[in-house]
Length: 244
Figure 1 (cartoon, rainbow, N blue to C red):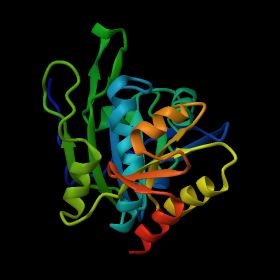
Figure 2 (cartoon, one colour):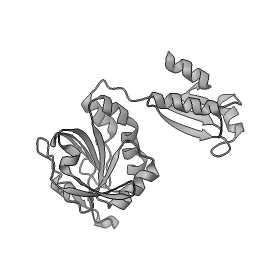
Figure 3 (cartoon, helix red, strand yellow):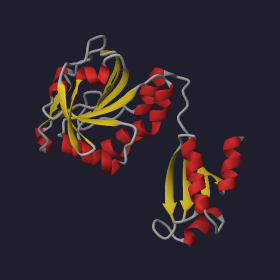
Figure 4 (cartoon, rainbow, N blue to C red):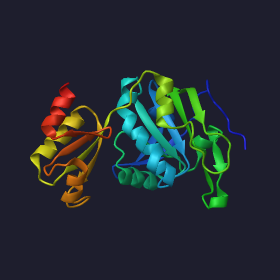
C-alpha cells in the first residue's frame, strides 16, 4: 500500500454534501480552505473505537489552544455519509470540530489516502492522518505508518499542536462532583467555561453516590473540584485557584 505525502500541493477540489443542524449543505474545498488556516484529521470511521475515544475528543479538547495559535478551524473527515457524521458529532458532544463526510471518498482519494477495508466489511475508507492547510496548500502532513490494523501514533492532536508551536501548553482539565439544582455547582462550571477549560462532571445520584464523594474527597458538600487530578475544593476554592 502506497501512502502519499502531498506536502506543498493544493488540496483536492471537491464538493462535500454535509448535514449541519439537520439540514443539507454543500461545502466546497474553497469554502473550507481559501484564505484560512485549517487543521484536518482523517480517520477510518465514525463511531469506531479509537476515533471515538481518542482522535476526535482530543482535537475537540485542544481546539481553543489551536485557535490561540492561528488555526481558524479544525475539520474531521471520514468516508461516511453526512447523516452518520452529524449523528456521531451529536453523540460525541463535539462542539469545536467541524465533521465533514467525504461520502464518495473523492477528497480522500485525491490525497492518495483511500484504502481498502473490505476485510472488515467497511469497503473503501480513509487511512488515518492529519494535516495543516494554509490557504488551500498542504504545509504539513502526519500520516500513520503502513502497519497492519489501525495505527494511531502521529496523527493525534498533541503532535499537530507541537508542530504549530512547541511551547504551546494544553488546557488544564477539571473533574467536578456536583448535584442537580446546586447553584454553587453552576458557578464552578461557569468559572471553568470562562477559562475555556474542559471538565468532566460527576453528578451525585446519577453517576456516583454521596459515599463515593466522601471516600474520594473527605467532604460531604458539592461541588468538589479536582484539577489535573489534584483536589482543589469548593467553588470558592476554585475561584481563588483560578485567580492565583
